[in-house]
Image: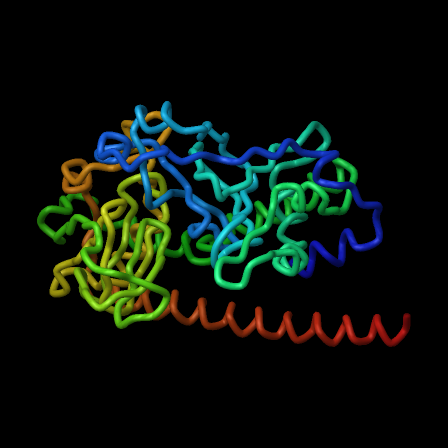
Length: 352
């Protein structure tokens, strides 16, 4: 974000109304079970928007529910803004086609705007949007306020250059040791099916009240959503999306509950080191198991057939140690860069 502000702070601005079409979602006007039960259409609520990419949703509606609301399909790579509740004024970037509820504003850019650039331009205005929210108990921001917001109007070439830098950064997250993983373990045959190595636990709807505090995280395919007092899965297991976000495994170091958009993968720890298994999942392409169209999804039956290598435990632990040390080193570098940015910013202000 600091890189975006530094790159585009001195260029002219344009109002959202002049560069985007704004669209609000919709909600079926009754809670008929046939509008929700068994639904497979992803339906995004404002509470799921929290400054980041969105690969899946935790709520689904049926085709009948879609037809009985003003909700419309929103294309992938669109910007969404929460208009109501605790997340009002926060921004997300959706990576799959989905529908939204009435408390979500979608920005559809005109020609001349890269969607990813629009996301970061809007993200840079989060503080301003939150300052424009009204209502203490339930903050809200109107679509007219969003349309009046001004963002930097960079040239299309500048936008593409910035997006290329971001894309490259995303690709490098596991790339630092992915090649080393393949080099260390390619000599071991991938011939042991998952059903002999691990237990797959189906997620369930959380049975009680939940909120932002509690003993155990309540997780979906994209990670922690809320907290509660019940657990379903043990620590040191892996979350893998069942719908939508199927190719981004998450390692959980604490006990937790998992909802029905995801699986919990619990390995036999006498055979597989949990962290080794997590890194194995990071380099595996789960999208090749997807049999759906609009909404990617995985089945337990297909996952149990996956075959993988099982190196000696000493080799697994050796790689885990290398990977964890690399993560620590990157963390130190990020802290150092952040401190350097602060110092540089102070020096620039003093000169100005």
